[in-house]
Image 1 (cartoon, helix red, strand yellow):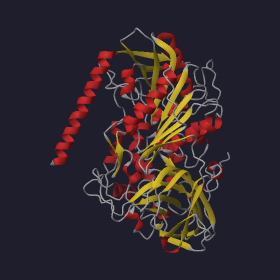
Image 2 (image 1 turned 60 degrees about the vertical axis):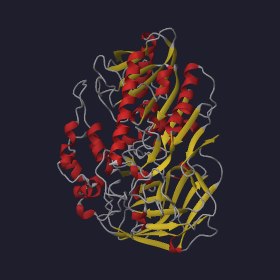
Image 3 (image 1 turned 90 degrees about the vertical axis):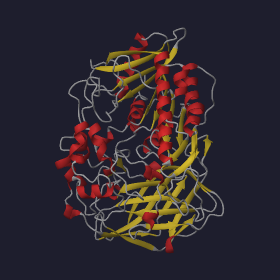
Image 4 (image 1 turned 135 degrees about the vertical axis):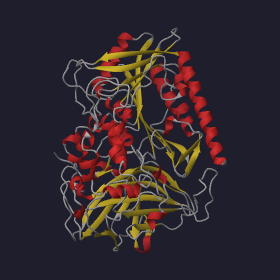
Length: 635
């Protein structure tokens, strides 16, 4: 009952705050709508909120989105404007635009529309997200009043991609950009992870896989979930997805008319379809200020912010204004201040989003767009998720050495082993009894998030999961930078497999619950997931050209986990888990090699033995260019 009344109180204050902000927008901003023509004649629906105070000029802050610029009704206003309320009250001209083929804009929607390198503003045939942004800015500068000639842009998730996509061939007036939780490459982010498909994203496909017949203010995909919902049993995501069977079921009877699902299903490899949609390959000649933002526990887009920042840095060495911010957030949580910052069961502190908004985001835009005092922000503003505090770095990843984790008998994990272990570790992997990715039974969701800090004890007890842990640490151990898993593997009875590697913080057995720990959770002995990644083994040599394993033959499987900044405290342990199914977060690899897993039959799902040799390691820190150790793709 106490929790019920607390929920009502929180809901009341949240509603009251939203209402106050909406009143603030109405009282201080004028709303105007436009249909802005692009170079090919397509018109994009654009909403402009201009300050009522016209005694001064303002910078333009723009967000382009596929998720609607609602409210569309005349006299209706957004509840808040801009990246955060502090900027709304500071005073900017805020611009929101529906991208091509979405909501009230004309044209055809294209998921991660390919970039056209060197796009000329005079070319009316080749359009991309950068050219649409360019044309929009050009129109705004000519038609809006009371602007100071400077433009900034921001966006979270898909709007973060649109922000990143406008970095190359940018309009000269675009002086500050903040891609936040941006998609960098669709084969490694969001719907895929290192070649594996996220089956847990099935609910998301209707949003992206259907075209509108004409501009509309109403959702056109609401009924596209029906065939998924009709299957029933959605309160248990694991059982629900097992009952679907092979992914061919989705193609045949759930999403037969979903063009995005069919794009994914017919392009199982990293072919030209995916490569040309990777914006990270086009981030050249970026000469304005860029602040990329992400969350260490962002289940949707962790690859994107890290790799967009790194690519801008590497491709534009003379740009002094490229920085990255990574906090203890789930997807987009930096834009919301809830008081306490929780990810699943773990509390990371209070008012962390508010600190970011006031001390990082607002000063960044104020300096570059308004000419306010230089906040002297660091190259990398990063949150240590173990110490639970902010740290600043002059470069990312930091160059502070490498730590190697090695595997030895009896489940022992050794820090910087002096010699290579000759041991071998094996488990039987059965795709018909996959390892669950959650410690609790959870319903089907739009996209999963909470698992990113979940307790891994449910997995460490399974015979198909290899578990290694260090002795109790007698001093703090900080792991920072890039992570590379280097596995030496042998397959028996199968010729394909996935590999999941998880880095885990094991709490002391006498750990006490915190003030915000959920009642049903005990932190004593909690095995908190810190970082994990999955890798589809068929891509070990080339993401574009998969190949079967040779049964009984030792092969190398090297792949990166995403970056980390985490201090394992004195009294804790470091744990590594290795296994080959992780369901239904990723789809099931049949383990019998088939050309296209989306076309696999039930009889293809095969049980086999996987051997991990003791020569395998996990390296954290300086890896002499981790991208050079990734499987190379050659078209």
